[in-house]
Amino acid sequence: MKIKVVNQRLYLEPPETAEGTREYLKAEFSFSEEWDGMTKTAFFRGAGNTYSQLLKDDACTVPTEALAAPGWVGVSVSGTLGETVITTDIKSFSVPATLSGGTPSDPEPTVWQQILDKVDETQQIAQSVRDDADAGKFAATAEMVEQAVSVFMAGFSPEMHRNIFRGKSLGESITAEQLEVIRDGSFRDLYVGDYWEINGTKYRIADINYWRNVGYPESEKVQKPHILIVPDTVLGSGQMNTSNSTAGGYRNSSMKAARLVQIADALPDTFKDMLISHRIFSDGSWIATSVDIMNEVMVHGTYICTDNNNRQTSDTQQLALFRLAPELKAIGVNYWLRNVAGSQTYTLISQYGDASSDMATSTYGIRPVFAVG
Image (tube, rainbow, N blue to C red; front, side):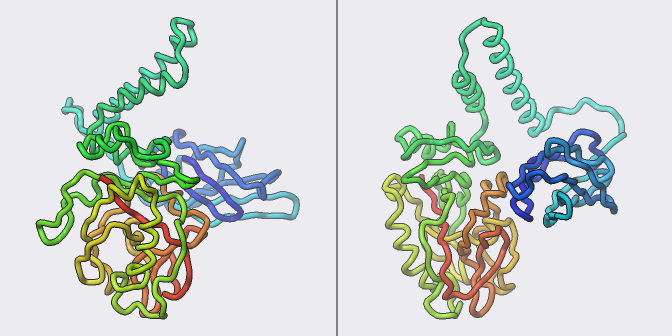
């Protein structure tokens, strides 16, 4: 489990764990320079109690007692140096229930077990290649090993490509080969988190086939295979509306009518010629669109600051990018989301990573989402 600590804020990459785990789950911390020289202690709150662990080399084992029951486990850190004490906020991760006991059986392997077996097999193959190279049996470079693993991963189904975060550079533009595997629906060698870096901006694959079979009327449902792209930073800034009013919602805002048109026009040419036009349900109506700002569900997986009367949407799932790498939600600047929060306010992600809202005339970053295919 990777945990990043910046000043007094804690950023947690949720682990895959389960009830009753013992002496297995490790917590590895990285600290900003304010923590240099500190004696650091981690606190884990679970199963009704709080347990502390002194960090050694910025790491510790999560206490067995904190994982003894299903539910949520909170994590925080404190550091001391003389009279100085630094504490962090609390972040939580889920501990799902598990089963034990029962009658032994010999069931058919589940799909998930087949996936795990394939991953394990991949790791064994990669390690075998490394061992042979170390033994001098052949001259294998790290690049050769990576290529061998990539070839093996190519056997995954297209659906699995949205459940793997890789984060590989794909070059400076979409190649003809990359466009071909998008349009044929195989998505070969394309995974969530992979990116094209253009003029210093990383345009990252955020999801795959997110809008497939979505749209109204029936003839407007998206059928083309596609990938969603979200840049790692904002591409500009602007107001949601020129007056402090959310009347008519996002679909009638100056952001949608004017500023996003400018953002779309300024996209790199490699994307503009293959944008997917689709229809979304927004503010009570279906509208045609291609480049938008995200809603709260796409980022958080749920509504947080959205007004209760503005929750019907066709974008009903969290983007795979933020499900697999939630730290990419926070980019150090405020940026707009498209949900109405009140009569004068829209939702946003603050520079600190929290869900927030502000006046429609405020000027914040624009981090668009679009699809190509």
